[in-house]
Image 1 (cartoon, rainbow, N blue to C red):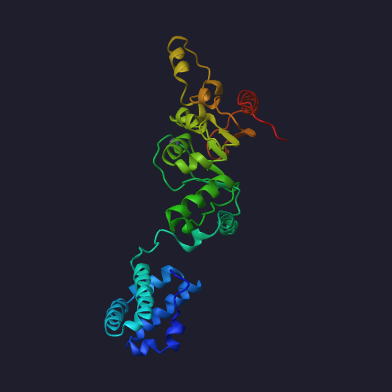
Image 2 (cartoon, rainbow, N blue to C red):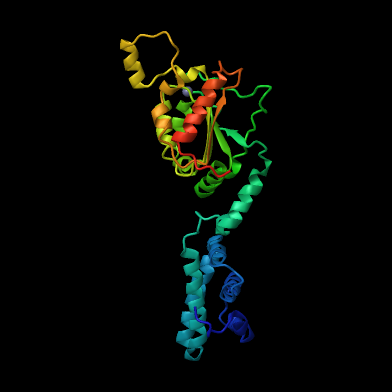
Length: 317
Ligand SMILES: [Zn+2]
């Protein structure tokens, strides 16, 4: 693109368009080409104007033909004709450039501004804890699924329409949600499945509340220990926490038969739970009374004391 070439309006002053018998479509596109050169029109829009009509593309190729013919007849017009031909080739280049369909205008905003939009979009979420994937029931650990009790606020369905616009926006919005809110999982099967299948969740999960129950508790806590951003952990215990034992406890009970209930310290997943590091807070909660049988206050407090020491929680308060 040369800034020394005469502009559309200079050619108009010389009455070149009429002399070369250029079509109205050609004149419109040459004017648009001038606007592109001046920076008031994007190249994508210039190309789109050619692509929107077969007549427009033909107008440009006809213009090149007419200018070439004029050059042969009137060598004195060669410079002006070359200027117009060059403008035409730039217009065709713009038309042939593949449209930038993968990039929405929103994604051209700086990342900080996009974060402000995500914050605004999520401002309707009033809950601080989101129930993750509560509608899917595909495990059989006996978990109680609906947190919709009188003690809990109704399930707040998060509007995820924004996440359906494109993959990049989906990733960014999910990163925002995973980072800002506490996610609640009904059981360790759910937590294990989601952490294994969702790398965005693994990379951004910051605060989690999980009911420690189910046959995959060890796998779930192993995955949780790999979440680099995890800062807050709330373990919900119940009688069902000890339905599944560690392999060692299971083996021992074959030889040391006992009618004593299994201790929390022997529940499946305890060894993996104790490998989690990097937290700034950890707490142990009772399950809701309507959900399943609670453990004693002493057991809850003992586990909380154990986790605070063994997980080397970085106390910031
Ligand atoms: Zn489960």
